[in-house]
Amino acid sequence: MLELRRVVRRYGGVEALRGVSLRVRRGETLSIIGPNGSGKTTLLRVMALLDPPDGGEVICGVERGKVTMVFQQPAFFNTTVYRNLAYGLRLRGRPEGEVRKEVRRALSLVGMRGCEERRAGELSGGEKQRVSLARALALRPELLLLDEPTSNLDPRSTRLIEGVIEEVREECTVVLATSHPFQAARLSDRVVCLFEGKVLAQGTPREIVERPKGRIRKFVRGEW
Ligand SMILES: Nc1ncnc2c1ncn2[C@@H]1O[C@H](COP(=O)(O)OP(=O)(O)O)[C@@H](O)[C@H]1O
Ligand SMILES: [Mg+2]
Image (cartoon, rainbow, N blue to C red; front, side, top):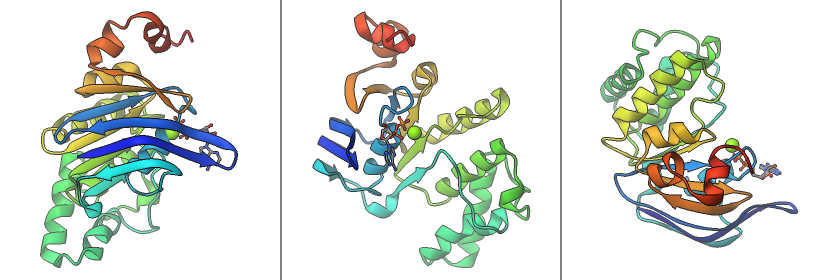
């Protein structure tokens, strides 16, 4: 569905991605794990076609409008939850009846039905993250990119979000960036391990997280 070949991305003098090659297969859930600053967000932005690479290639087998990224820090318009979710659908020219239906469906998926008229800015951190996920789901993406969707959330909100990801991955290709290897193992088919802008290893959750060998083992345990 998406292939990156030797992708480089720089911020001024900083090389945030240093020749990343990987593939996302249609229907899979792929996790990108790596410590803070390893390049996860930069990589997701390139995969979401938001930022062009400074080197290498991105080969995309999916329509741009079918790719949606959920950011680590959700940003909303200063209005209701309903209008925030409706925005993207209206932009795509959907009739109001359909907008209503899709907004309802998306809010139900994340357990936020009934919150339509609350102001988005007044939600709690966990609720914001759920509504942000619902906003992406309302667009029925084929490729959903999630940037650390549970960082800073309490255990209950984390479980809720993880439950939604488990449902969503049945019908959509998902790329999940997380700094928690065990979350990656729980939620994905394949794990790519990023370190200082390079792919250190990739494999199944078992190979990378549960039974890692050698330096991957140290990495997963935070002993690098
Ligand atoms: N807007 C930016 N300007 C300058 N440097 C940045 C910017 N965004 C990220 N970086 C740098 O790029 C590297 C990778 O960052 P990032 O992709 O945010 O990593 P992660 O998401 O894994 O924490 C880090 O060294 C970070 O400081
Ligand atoms: Mg990040």
